Amino acid sequence: MMLYDQIASNKRKTVVLLFVFFMLLAAIGAAVGYLWLDSLGFGVVIALIIGGIYAGSMIFQSTNVVMSMNNAREVSEAEAPQLYHIVEDMAMVAQIPMPRVFIVEDDSLNAFATGSSPENAAVAATTGLLKLMNREELEGVIGHEVSHIRNYDIRISTIAVALASAITMIASFGSRMMWFGGGSRRRSDDRDEGALGIIILILSLISLILAPLAATLVQLAISRQREFLADASSVELTRNPEGMIKALQKLEQSSPMHHPVDQASAALYINDPLKKGERFSSLFNTHPSISDRIDRLRHM
Image (cartoon, rainbow, N blue to C red):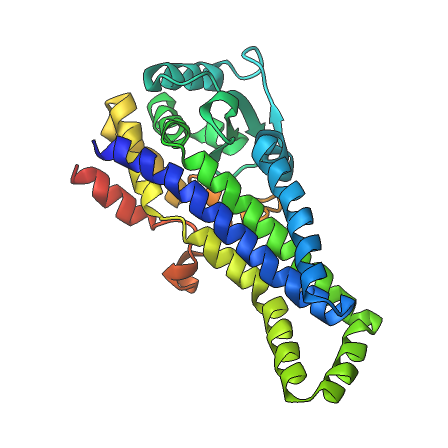
């Protein structure tokens, strides 16, 4: 029952995330509109239109967009037979359609899944993962990613990527406009408008500065429990807890990704591709620690 409850919960979170997405877009749009267009309402409308188009593109074309963001290329059964067959086997056991299969040219050990539903999902693995993991370990990793697809985690993750990317894009645009004098004219107008104008100006500037952080925190608000659930679901699919545990042990020793990883898509990976480790507060981590994940598997 826990698995089906989690799937239902993930579907509800999709609606909540969409609501938060558009609320944040409205706030950033209001700030940009006030500072450079002299209109809160017009800024909100423009931001919602841009954000809606961007989010729709990400949701309905998420597989191609995310794979492109992460420099992944699609492979056929002939190009990567072992990976292809393991993905096929795990999908069959999980009773989902066969996902598309991609490879990322990188020596680090990592993998991720994406897509807005099991019908248009895809799985990607790094070349380093394919070189260093044996079959049972690779089955554990692919079982984890297929579990994300079956549990509808990928839909939530895709919306989170859209949220973080769109908010950061609009905030970046607004910040760059500071150099073109719009902000200076707005500050001059605010001095004429009195204390209320100055307060609104300050709030608008704070919104622009904190927007990327807010987007990241909303993305990380997606429970890290989904990683624990995917680990456990992988064991359910493979019937081999040691394979998943050994895979996690190798992932813990992996170096960071060598090619640039967009911060918005870092949470999609099975292992933190940026390897921030303990230098940052756990509140800002995209993944629970590997040691915690292994400990939970050992106590299943």
